Amino acid sequence: MAIGVAAATGQLGKLIVQYLAAKGLPVIALARNPENVATPGVEKRQLDYGSPSSSALAGVTVFVLISSGSFEPPRLEQHKRAIDAAKAAGVKHIFYTSILRASTSPLVLAADHKATEEYLEETGIPFTSLRNGWYLENWLGTIDSILASGSILGSTHGAKVSPASRIDYAEATANVVAKAYAGESVKKYYELGGAPITLDELAAEISAKAGKSVKYVDLSQADYAKTLEGFGLPAGIAFIFSQSSESASQGGLFTDSKDLEEVLGHAPENWRDVVKRFVK
Image (cartoon, one colour):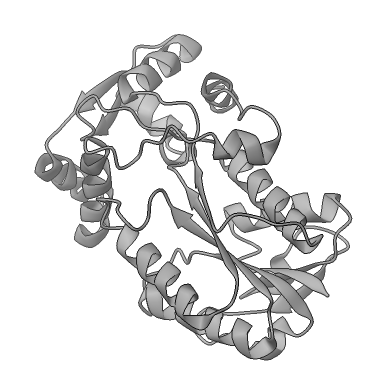
């Protein structure tokens, strides 16, 4: 009996592996290139979403399926293949990293998540959907560009968003997985997000921490997409980012759920402290 974590070399997956290993739980790190798994003392196995093998999941009773960051082959097809492999291997519970309110979200990104949740339902395997909000790192990961340009671009139109740090999402996942592994009951859906903020507030905090003027520049979705294409993003990816930002104005990136704090057992990391970590 073990816990298998897919995409174990990814930014979220490697943190989940670390948290589970720190709890002393039997973890199998599953990755396309398992030799790149950094956490010591964990078993490593090869698992590629493109052609996942049920043998890679032998002995796995709890499977953490991290949503694919690749769109080729189609992301939903990748998820279905991994779920089929888990079912064939006799996995007893699947944890899937989804998106806020996947079944009703206005984000185009949510379509694959909604369909994946529906497919999980069809399989009959007990599952839990960890519906993560936006990552603070989605903005702060480009801090050098933000400081160089003095601006954060978007199409949120003053709406509040509820982001949290990747560390918090990883710890929350590990906590819920550990609970299920111990035989305790867990919910089917968790709506996970941090304290609501606006991008004007985020820009002001970056400005204060960096000692340099940073402003939020609000654009139409079309202009934001064109700007992103000008930065070199493919048109399809630029559309996804701009549409996600525009959807924030419809509440797509907001939640008042307290699930994250409850699962963590403590308050999520204050977003201002996360900004401080990134602004050097």
